Image (cartoon, rainbow, N blue to C red; front, side, top):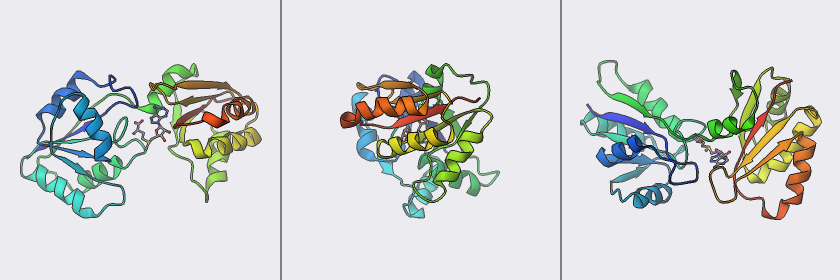
Length: 228
Ligand code: SAM
């Protein structure tokens, strides 16, 4: 039976990859990835050439079955996502869930983590907020349930971390301004990339700064809200 390696890859800067991740990527029979173009950038950079299979959150079960079949045949498979640690709010999670749910106890498939970057941890590490206890809430819903999500953030007794895209960042700050106007927030954008920027302050203060930068607001955000 093969081994499924869950490999963390860079969240921007291609140098943020562990020696072990490179070693395992070089050794496996197959790399299961989200978007082949994204993974090829990384593999080409390190001159690693491997067969790639793309899975996608909504793709047919056949992709998952193909990966499970390869493992059953004794092949070693690396699972990566477009950025960061697979399974943390990304399509990789579904694959791992499916394989673990359908894995017979005696199947002998090993699932091995190869830890490394994750946007949650990178942002938390520079927040300066107490991180002995925190809640990670993934992405806010786009429409239905969005208000409830932010009410939960505002009520939380711990530091809350969540992800948000450029398109909804202003809306997210407006919502936090209304529900938790006094709370200190860190909004970390494009971490480890050329236009890395970290906004600190209350939701209102960050909103003002974001509005000043409105014309070049690109990239994805991690938002951290300090507890009271
Ligand atoms: N599994 C990934 C991880 O461990 O970081 C997260 C995948 S999730 C689909 C992608 C989201 O992570 C982005 O929308 C953004 O909120 C956050 N993210 C990823 N890379 C980032 C970066 N370089 N700077 C800030 N946020 C980032």
